[in-house]
Length: 449
Image (cartoon, rainbow, N blue to C red; front, side, top):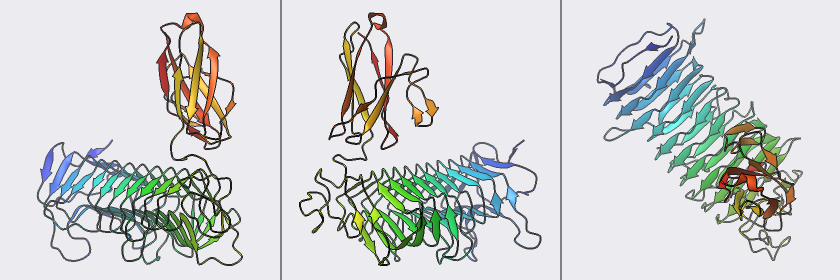
């Protein structure tokens, strides 16, 4: 049973001490305002603080949860030390008059913590030693430092934070990096996932961080997928991977565009046995090379960067390999051949025409991978959602499959099929799947006339 630490709608103006160790504890539905503390030491002005004991024997708190709380003009909203298996949900942290700390939420040595659906005027810091961190669907604006930092300390000391999952966040105008995964040089991070985030107007700070930054140590199984990282300032790239070893990494289906530095910058990166694949990305309108590689060892193999969109169907410009390329330029030691002819960041789009009973209907899909197989589905039972191995589908089973088709050079395909008279007045739901992109189209419903 959860112990409610405050009643709904309560406004706190003086400090309250709540004893821990009583089991799961939830703070829910109240507001903390104008708490700046003594303005001395390391932890002044924190709205909600929880600290375990690092002495012998160490003590770690668990199940300390924050839900639907507002903090106004507090130096920090949340500060956890050795707090595991907890969540922070729907926190609103704003500053009208107060002086913000670099990070509204700080986690140290706290494992299996989820931070989700928060609205912050400052960043999120989870370092060091925050394994299995989950940072989901937050909005972060005007952070004085980084938007989201997960890993080791900023000076690369302390234990790393293994298996971070960063998804669905929007980070705008961070003075440092937008999203940073930083590893201790002596350690390995496994299965890090940065997916479906939107990053805008990152300034990079004094140490040059990109919209998304992967930094230090070894990363095994890294995935950077379906992010939109654009408009980074002061020569910063959309994606920076630096001073690390990448083993079995994949950067796919992202958009890196309009940055004042390269779209993707690899600086002093070694690639392990699994290599690094950069595929199905949209790379255009960045300053300089869309992919640039610095400080590589002469024995490092070429970077596999096939099936990307470079701003033109003729591929990227390279002075010797593709001098007639009408797209944006690419650097050396990049295997960019077999490029896409359309912008890969657009999701496959399905539509229908001629859906009249007793006639032949037509189902068309566009924005797929050129010269690639596409499967179309239809259902008479509803528009989902149905969770499958392909993702969350917008057709309800049991559904039928139309014949598999191949797209043309522009990524378009179509299927024709007979519509029985018995379907008049009934709705049909359609969806398509691009095997190359491993991506579902939109769902589409039409009523048979």
